Length: 110
Image 1 (cartoon, rainbow, N blue to C red):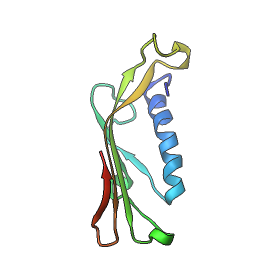
Image 2: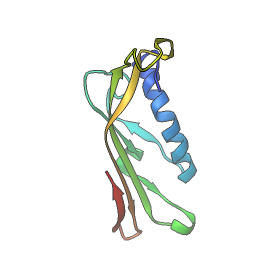
Image 3: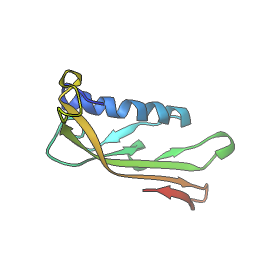
Image 4: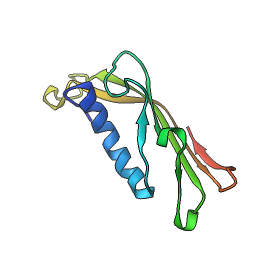
C-alpha cells in the first residue's frame, strides 16, 4: 500500500498486521529505530518487541512469535499511480513461530 511519505507507507503496511494481531490478543508491533522513516536500510518489526504473544483460551500458554524485515522504497510509476503515494514497503524476510507452553517449537514459517 503506497503512501505519500515513508512514514505513511509504513503505517499503511503495518495497519493490517496490527488488526490481525488484535484478533489473537493484546500485542504491539515494535519497529527498529528509524523503521518508519529511513529509506537507506533494511528495518525489522517484532511482535511485542520479540516476546511474541501468549495465547489464551484453548491455546492458553502457547506463544505466537512474529517478525519481518522490510525496506521502504520508492514506488514504481509503471505499477502504482503516483497520486496514491511515492513510497511503499517491501518485505525481505519473515519469521513466524508457534510454540507450546513448554517452549517447544510446534511450527515455523520463514
